[in-house]
Figure (cartoon, one colour):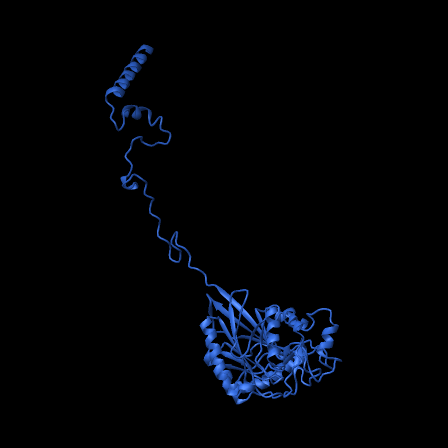
Length: 403
């Protein structure tokens, strides 16, 4: 029996060998062995030499990647760059009123600005109490009333001639003030020499200024360029309109991002603007100004919104060395924040008034403007609301627009 089985096995083996030698094909040389023994030698279970789908290759034999399923609705296409985000910037400007860093010729030394300056140890003293506002904005501008000169050649036709030492320009830098308007009725108190010495002192401190046909341009750390004009309506009357038109036009040609118009106008100690003030203020905006800043009355006046832009008719005194104890010590800081998207100014109404006193003490002027608190702040805001009522504008207790 064992011999029969052995003989049968040898016959089967002979058949297999004959098949392997003569009956195979290029496609599969061992078909019978594959039938008997399965896909030995091919652990993946693939058929060697099987034709691959020609559609998987391009004409030079490189595989073509399979199709990517279409993106679902709301999904970005693969490889598609997201749209660029809009670049938004905000610029805050703080404006304050008349600053005279010095005395007039009739003042005694006692309790004068000069005496206080001689006694202080820190030149930041004068604007110390408003530092949080001036240091946190992008530009602070004040009206510089008087001159910085050693000249004694004063204009004797004037009642008061205001001057300080050229070194006092450092007080502006210490107070985080970057710009001044200089067109006013005290610029020529000591003639051309006084004006020239003041300009030199301002330039030495890097303070940007403007007066008459001289426009100022201040570039913020964010790259926004703020241009401003400064005119003296007290001297020029409605002739100031021509200077405003020339100055604003020049700034537009320079391609500045914002334009301020600073106007020295009105009647001293009058809380309501004249017809000339209202006409010129609105004209400034018609010409292209984004904000109009007024001074000279030495007291507060109202605020008007005209064609979406603001006219501050009088900011009153601020750090005012020419008066050792003014009866009306109320003042304010006007702040406005402008928004730019991709360099284009947007239309918005982000304004705030900071009610202040010109002094940190009540019985005299210590030349240290100080924000008002509590009932005093509410009282000053109430005054501004009264003066602004004819323009339909009012401010809430936090100093922001109430409507």
